Image (cartoon, rainbow, N blue to C red; front, side, top):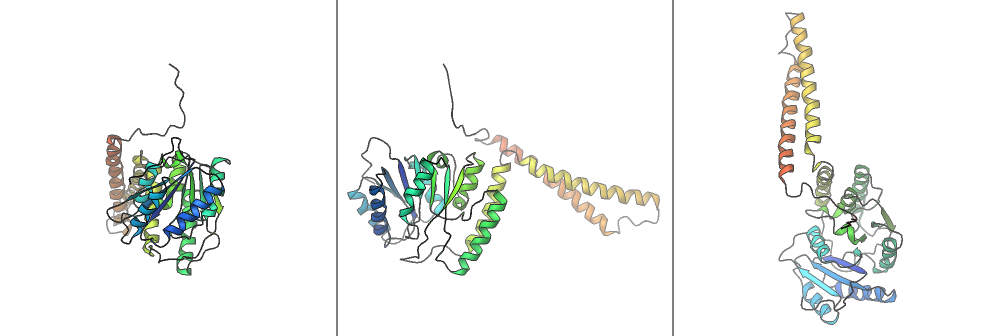
Length: 323
């Protein structure tokens, strides 16, 4: 972009909008955001993250930026996904409060002041929107409710709508996490694991789609579950994989050895006892082998973890240094 924000002071608010083929909705969304931010005197920047759109979205964004220096944008060479768009946008955010919203007009900019207040005045680290009344087909709402329930139970975070694109963050949160794959659904989980535990939610308006069609299919729920397993493992055991693999390895190996000991005692006490012909013998062998493999996996993972560049990369909230 040729234009940059001319203000010397940093804006209070950064509004991040990831998009893919949304040329029809962008002008209306922009005008709506400007109306709300001007009414509430919010110094702001608007960051459009074009995820490789194939339509004229980028041309629309360039026109908007020509008349408004608060508009920033970047465009990927191809479609990398929402997580990649958000991750790159978070790198250039300057606002103390960051709000993300989708570009399809299903998220209402009228929610911006309320979300901003919850971060700025109420002290929340992260606030997730809750689309309590949704304008989506049953094929989307039912799996979404199940997905949110499982995620809430697994993570211990009491939210009704993890996947809502309308969220607000303290800038410390988005500067402390890295989003990749499809992990944008689990930003609250990553934030909590990073130490930001004041997480809340706000009921927000969910509007019917005005232009275009949804860009997500049912495969997102399968990918979402796999990503949840990944993020829970990495955040809990990323720096100590032996605690996970080693524990299960020792447990399974011990069970196998106890079974073999039982069978061996039976063989010595009763000479006619067919030790190797019993199904329990083969279960014991399987447990011993799996236990040994899990322990070895944990050992190798521990070596990889200790040699990684960020093995001692810990987040520091505040620091006092007296010289």
